[in-house]
Amino acid sequence: MIAARIAALALALGLPVASPLAGDATEGDREYEATCALIAAIAAGIRPEAYGWSPILFAREKVVAINANDPTMVTVICPDTPRVACMETYNPMKKVGDMVQMEGRIRYLDRKAILLDPCHSVPAE
Image (cartoon, rainbow, N blue to C red):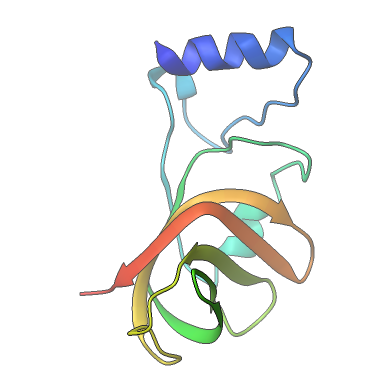
């Protein structure tokens, strides 16, 4: 119900609205499970100007880079293009090489990178 109201408001204001790549979104957001190998194909169906697209979950990926600037940090997964970056709260325990579970919404994408925002990552089990 809330998702329908938000979509109606976005349309009324003329904001771009992205639709999920597969499935019926009438029940609300659909979460997509991705891997670094599949993210380029998933992201190919997303308009770069679209906002509010359904969440994407990476169940277990290796951290390949970290750019920390307390109180925030950018955690990067996926060693090949496109790399996936997550802007999140600074965590001094997170290191390059850690395995993480990352979830977020695509805010920006191009051929080289995807930015998830809002997003978060936690140690993968």
